[in-house]
Image (cartoon, rainbow, N blue to C red; front, side):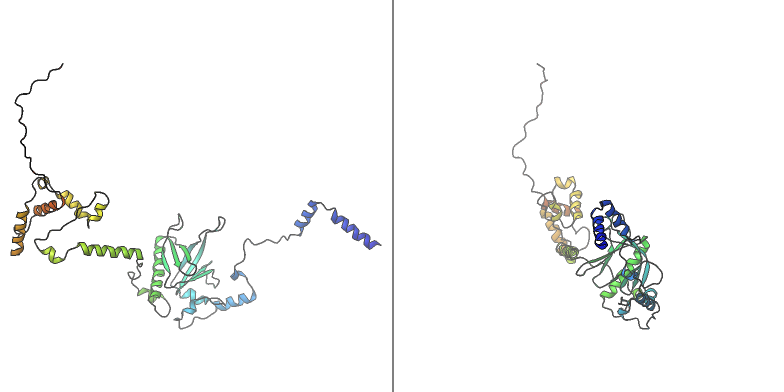
Amino acid sequence: MGHPTSRSTRGSNNKFRTPIQVFTDALASVTTVPVSGSLPFPTDLESPQRKKMQQACLNEKIPENLDDPALFRPRPSGINTPLIWQHCTMKGWLTKHIPPTFSFTKTKKKRFIILADRMLYTFKTDHQTGQFREFMELTKSTNVFVTDQFAGVPYCIEIRKPSEETIHWYLQAPDAETMKLWLERLKKTIYWLRENHAGTVNLAKLATIDTENFSPRPTPRASQNEHGMKSQSSIYSPSPDVIQSSSYVPFITPPSSPGVSSYHAYPNHSVRSSISTSLSFEDYCYPFDRSRSTSSASTSSSTGSPSLHSSPSLRTTRSIRLLNTLPPPLPPPTTSLPPVPTHTPPFKAQ
């Protein structure tokens, strides 16, 4: 009969436990082992098999033929550590920025960046190791340029790789010279890939690329504007034969309104300003005789003499322009003016 009595006693004890006792028992059951603040990176899991693979990568020999791009890509067993570290085209410490998704996330990390062939690798240390953090493969469609994506972050390079989900890397250099050097190596690598060359990229091949070749390609909008400017210049610019002839006088259509449209009516703003500033008071008061200008122009064109007397003068050109841009003068008055009074009576105040 003792066994049922003890069982009932335990039940009564559990029934009458206070909330403080329950909370105390819960705290006592929690382990005191420190918990990591973040999940471990996959490459940080040091298993015996993982250590064996890392040691094999460190002791891996560099192949004699380095023309295969697959040698620089990551593999399930890791990367060829001696090949990546010894045959890279650029390496150094950069700050990798990440666009913040939440306010409490870390947005920048110091990383050791290595550019080997077309592969970019990030490491936490500058010692030769195979534990890389991230990697990116540069392609023909990759764009590299300086960006101001982050406020107060100078010398920042954006590497944009269009794909199904656009990939962005933001790498900040410590100074302007380092930024220029990284930009040059990255742009030359992308230019070499766009030329459909076979093999891998090395310093000897990058040295043969001229810096003028990998200038940024114009955007479609910029190319359209450039084509429009060329077409306008071809419309307004006369042929050399017409310019050399002495009877050539440029004709300019007057603007419809003195507002913004006046800049579009003239092909060149400097021509419009020269017309408005070069006309003198004498040109306005005494317009040029059209018959005289026509006869002098025809005489000079028939003789073909390059002398200054046969060519129209500057005043002739101004007057012809004035006649084309100004309305015709008013006719003279038909009635006589009133006579001038001979004697003016003094003014008397009333």
